[in-house]
Length: 292
Ligand SMILES: O=P(O)(O)O[C@H]1O[C@H](CO)[C@@H](O)[C@H]1O
Ligand SMILES: O=c1cc[nH]c(=O)[nH]1
Image 1 (spheres, rainbow, N blue to C red):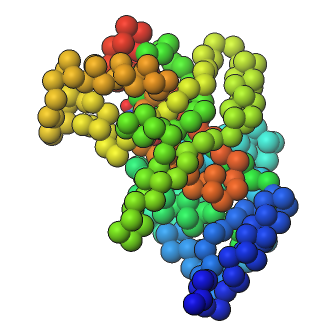
Image 2: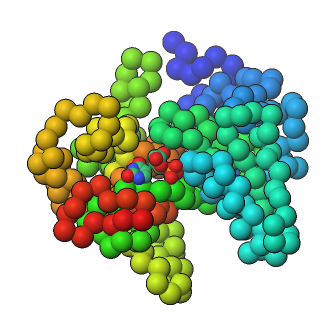
């Protein structure tokens, strides 16, 4: 019986290829079907292997920063342009994905800045296409950072949380993805050295409270995060606080909606990943919660 997808490399040869790719710093795609495709269309980015010269456009990218909103990611690219001395203040950046109104993508030298929308399904589609893009472009040693907002839990107002581990709503370091009719569980560890490096950078900036902690990822902004002000609310305020207290005791310092999928996908594909999140509001008064 054939143990691999017909027309592709057997599993052992694919594993060797992955090991070589990992050693060389290349991005790994773990899909044997891709080798059989004449063209790879990155639908939601409005890019493709036949329509664009991806190595020429992106081959020198070393950092990818992702965040929910298109305007924030444009502002971030403009900021990076100024920081890197690549453009005068106020100079605009072009949206590389302008042909699609799903995501926006900008570049500033070796830095790519991309929006991902809200929630796991949205970031997951973007990451599949981004990872394939980096693979087709033959990028090496790429670091990816999610910069976003979050709800803070028991931390000083105005703090930034660097995620050491993304956890689910039961405080477990796992991402459960339904694949066909199976639930596949994937690990959500992030790069600890990168977290320490980012923390060290924040120490150089005065009045920039920063800490490393677990980030909880939920499927919903309202009931999923214990909010009392959604269109539905099926719990009491006591129950909410009891849950948030348990989350805090499990090491959670902030809550958002993409980190488990981000950590799982980037980790599996050999990207050095981290999330860098600024709590925007307090999710419960655990005596000293953060505000924005
Ligand atoms: O600040 P961004 O990156 O948009 O992310 C956070 O904000 C959104 C909710 O307001 C969710 O997507 C959450 O993860
Ligand atoms: O998911 C999120 C994002 C920002 N602020 C929150 O409270 N939750």
